Image 1 (tube, rainbow, N blue to C red):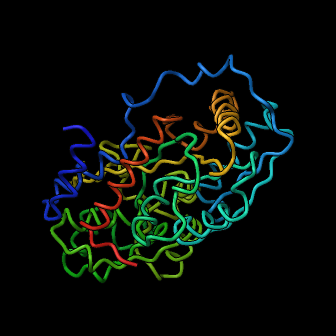
Image 2 (tube, one colour):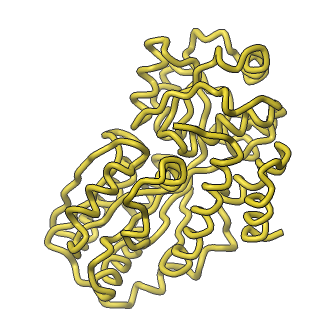
Image 3 (tube, rainbow, N blue to C red):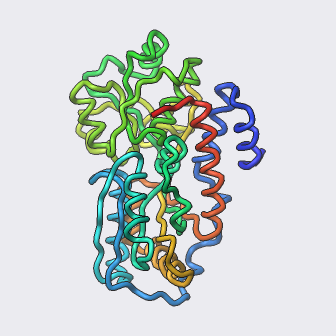
Length: 343
């Protein structure tokens, strides 16, 4: 069954068993090597107009995954001479939809602006159905994929996934999860876990934040018991042993952490991050931004960022990315409905 067939089957059957739900979500977010188009080096010989100023709009908090991605991309572009100067702007809230609306209002005609976004924003749009959506921007390229990690404070009574699952089954509402925005991949993962344990995801307690740092603060304050975010956002605290990782959302162990599937909760989900151009610039201006992004991802500086942050390079560009995005949006709507996620 291919991804489009899987989507239609899932959307038509909201009473899918837990295993069907997991397969649907996995098909949405698992890095697909076969789907990646020919190497972006095909753009190497094409002309590029370097920008005096590149504006990178980050619709999330400082230090979060989008912030890390945007600043790594900007630094690599500047070091490669593709932008003389780079400005960053952060505006978080509601899974990136606040920043998306602001970007569309202020920069729709700016040929030197890029918006960072990804699966979190797709999920937030599916859940909240805002007036401004990704239809008002132009998809340029998917850049990275990243698995999520479940962490608890070092002093937590949940020493492993088995203990966490037992408490969830005893009383789901007693375990407060925190992570990214409502409807985002972190929220989806918590809901998928509840579904796999044959629990009602609608009873899940979830506290949204705009960054991993905020999620860590909620854990420290005792306002949440489990946090979910990308490994890169938790790595420093894991290394310091102030946070204890319970599981990773990949199929097999990653980063020395066992997967949920290996611990009898068959759930796999990955996050992806991408860049979008303003919707009202010319096709030639969009193409120049695409070439700048592709050239940037071929630099040693960008490859080093992938390694330093434990990101998976997941390049998908142009029409291939636009087509994939349509499927991702429909899948996010189906998963949100089946998990009964709510604002």
